[in-house]
Length: 96
Figure 1 (cartoon, rainbow, N blue to C red):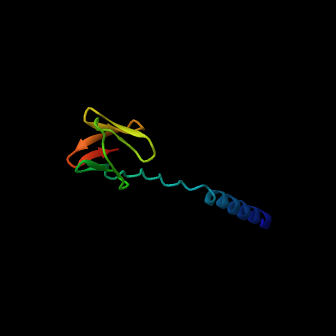
Figure 2 (cartoon, rainbow, N blue to C red; figure 1 turned 90 degrees about the vertical axis):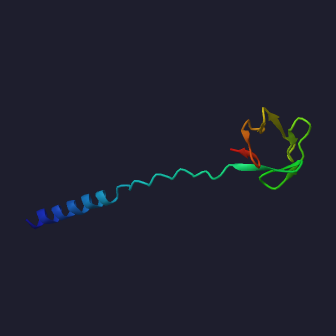
Figure 3 (cartoon, rainbow, N blue to C red; figure 1 turned 60 degrees about the horizontal axis):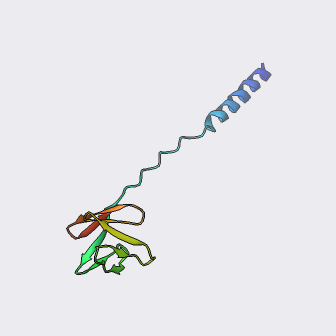
């Protein structure tokens, strides 16, 4: 009888440990909230990039970035070297 109680207690202890050691579900990572679009601001004849760099558009409306890449103007929007389009806005251009 004592052996049966010890065996039952041991089984309960081991099974209880198995239940407690189940991995807990991790919370789903929050989707990053995108802030306001980056702005390329117009300042007279120059444009101010999001990092504060000033560039002067050429006769086509495009300009050369400090890293040597060219941003072209196409149908009123700016087309970045990545292919992203910056739509015209009241203050300049709104970029994704």
